[in-house]
Length: 286
Image 1 (tube, rainbow, N blue to C red):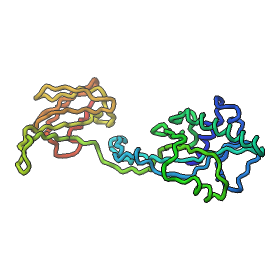
Image 2 (cartoon, one colour):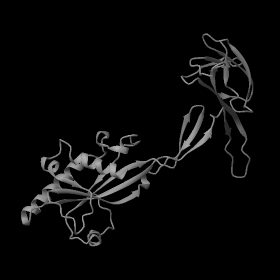
Image 3 (tube, rainbow, N blue to C red):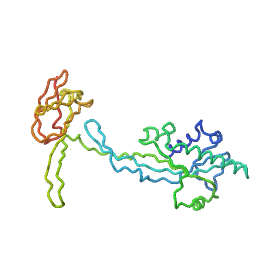
């Protein structure tokens, strides 16, 4: 994944709209230590830190339907990838310094254009499957408390002008657990607010029920079926996945009448709340 981010950064710097000198420069990701001596003008992006972005942390799992079941998936990890950007010339003296400063300024201005990285630049695993969030960037935002002198000393190199680029990517943890079939009954209880220690009386108790309409022979879902609670004369229509629901029901016994073109109408007695799973599913026969 990190190598794909490297190639994404290379693609941005090589873009046809970038300054000509920037496009002509070599792009390197090697550590800029005392042995680093490129033989041509070079923009070096050294990935020196990777850390979780706690501000983007999402504690809520993702619930999605797979067939007739639901699965719980952990949200992606949001990770800051921080590059140190330096520029290098193969010329000596003042000409080399001038070339390095020109490249550094062009790289800073060009990368600052992208508050998020457009999908057209994303490479490899960052593009397929696509990132769930466009990767945001921060350019030339040095964190407090970090010593540039200590950094260059650790590399055994002479300090030189540089800036930082932080890119926040999403990493899929691949953690998924089954949740079971869809809930068929949901209860909502309204209570009167009372002082602490006083039992709160129940003002109302409502239920929401849900089911699926299927072909009784093939078990293929039936969309656009008309489902009626006869006692209340409330009517809904099943969606493209055969699902239907009723809200704000009181506990009790009801009759579901389900009708669809080319199928025999069915009258099914039901109890709210349900005692078993899939209690409100309906199978129609031709």
